[in-house]
Length: 398
Image 1 (tube, one colour):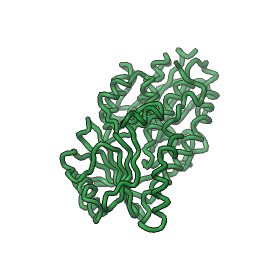
Image 2: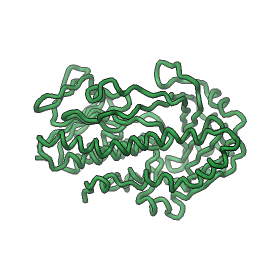
Image 3: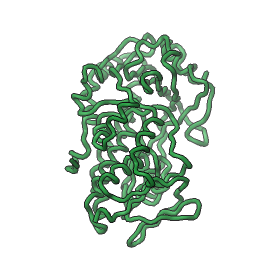
Image 4: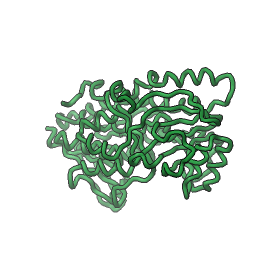
C-alpha cells in the first residue's frame, strides 16, 4: 500500500523539496539525495505565480512565504529609451491578481525560498553529499549509485536533478541536447537605494528595446531589486553555460537606454553572463519506475518566469499520483503523470521562447501591434497563471 512505498528523489532543489513535502504529507516514505554538502541556493530571485502559489499554500506554506516574499504592485512594460509606459496591469494593487488568478504573485530570493522549503521537510529526509552517477531499474526495485560508491534502492526514483540531469540519461538517453536560444542574460541584485533614476521600484517591470530587454522586481522586503538583462548574441563560445565578465560589458550592452536601466546593470560589484538554453521536448519523461520533473524534464527559457512554477506543478501532481497506489501500479501511475504534464509544459516552453522575440523588436512599424499585444497580456497569460494542476487532473486532495 501507499505507506509502504519508498520514493527516492535525486536533487534537493525547489522541485525535489516540494515533492518531499507533498509526499510526506500524504504519508508516502521519501528520501532526497542532494549532491551538495549543504542545502543552499545560488542565484538571485524567483517569481512565483498563482499556479504554483495555490499549491504551496495547500501544503501549509502560506504564512512562511508571505513572511519572505514581496507582491509586486503592477506588471509594467516600458520603452527602452525614455521609460514611457507602454502598458500597465494591476497585480497586488486592489488584490486584482489574487482575485482573478486564484492565488497571489510573489517575488522572493532563492535563498529565502529554499529556507522555507527546507524547514517544511521532515527531519532525516534529506541526505547530503550524495552525487548520483548511475541508475539501474530492476524487476522489483530501482537503484541509484552515488559517486562515493554507495547506493540506495527504492520503489520509485525521481530525477529532480536539473538541466544536467543524470537520471534523464536513464529515461531519455542522449536525446535531450541543449538548444541555444541566441540570447545571454546578466543577473544581479541591487539595493533600491542605489537606483535613484528608477521611476517606481514596486512593480514587476519589463523594459523593451531593440535586441534586448530588462526584467526586474523587488525581493527581500522590497529593499532589493532582482534583475535579468537579456541581449541577443550570435553565438556562445564558452565551455560552460556561464562565465564571469566585466560589469562594463552589461552597461555597454545597454548604452543609450534609460538611466534607470544602465544604473541598474552597473550597480553590482561583479558580473556573470549566462548562456540561455532550453531543451527540445522529451519524447518520454518516465521509464518503468523512474520519472523526471522540473528542468530535468522540460528546461525552459526564463522569459515567462515559469521554470520554478512548472516544477512545483510537476512535484505536487507527482505526489498525488503516487498516493494510495500499490507497487504494481507504479509504472501506470508515472505514465499518467507524464501524460497529464507533457502537453502543458511543452506549450509553456514554446510561449517562453516567443516572449523575448516580442520584447526585442526594433523601433518601427511592428511596434504598434506589439504594444497592443502588451496591453492584452493578462488575458493572454491567464491560461498559465490561473491553472490548477490538481483540479485539471481530477486529483485535488482536500
